[in-house]
Length: 408
Ligand code: NIG
Ligand code: FE
Image (tube, rainbow, N blue to C red; front, side, top):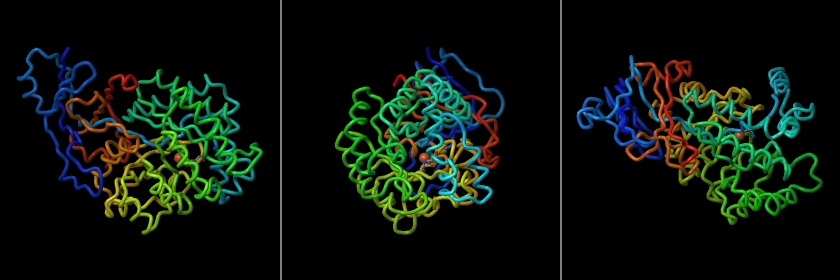
């Protein structure tokens, strides 16, 4: 059954825009009084509402009332929303001036969430993950990457990845799983960093393949986590096994982005510490540079150099990093809007970073409204697309449409 959804005051299909580099709002193709012709979960046409109606008089009409602006669904290409508990104690210590190491020594940090997540059973993890995914979905985020990394043992990392797989059948948001067993060397592992990574390669990655839990591997390259030398060896092995690579890079110190480029990762994420050299490396590669303003807000740290990355010609995506430690808020639009005011990003750059450029980091085709694409879109209660960032995240979608994204 064909259906025309509209009329929308404006439709921003975000089509025809380059994957890399700066974008001006004048480059946005804006369709006034637009409509979308859909059938069976697929978009057939996007264009003038009246023209679509005349061309297909038998199509059913799903009428949109009032002023509404239509965008593709957002893609959050970096989250850690499969976890139990919270880290409010860390936050209190942080705002009292304690350092990362002091917080970890006092029982906080990633290991605290590992302990809390290990104590939760798989069903509880599925339940809280579905709730978070549905909150994101209601806020227009229709595709969500979700990492493991709070298990840090064979059984516990598998528990997380299985929970993500089960949860994806219980939400209309599309979930994309990533194995982050290399988040840090677990405190209860009896051996060196090299030995832990070798154990992941030998014992965990083959099971992940076998159970088809994910084809993506992430790592946290940092002085306090995994060093660059071991990271490169690990990532090359994962790549040889057929995994796509993504990297937590340059969050506090540099080194990770060079490894990401060398190994041919899909994305390098964080980049708060990236300098001119790293910016150039990233811009000259095909990597997606993912900025995580929510982590800067949570930690009270500077943003990644988003403006400079775009000016240098990089592909810039914006993700939430939603996690219980550094980025507990999880409001992607709010974070992108607030960061864009500081970094001076155009609306076109922000929307590209939240949609098709973020989809490139996941190697999926999403984030544009065009014939042949799945129905995956959201409408905001305003007459002008510029109001969306102007309200800095307080304007939420009135409606979100998704085909059964997990079926595709
Ligand atoms: O992306 N940087 C490393 N990992 C997460 C934080 C995880 C945590 O603190 O629980 C991040 O910010
Ligand atoms: Fe992260």
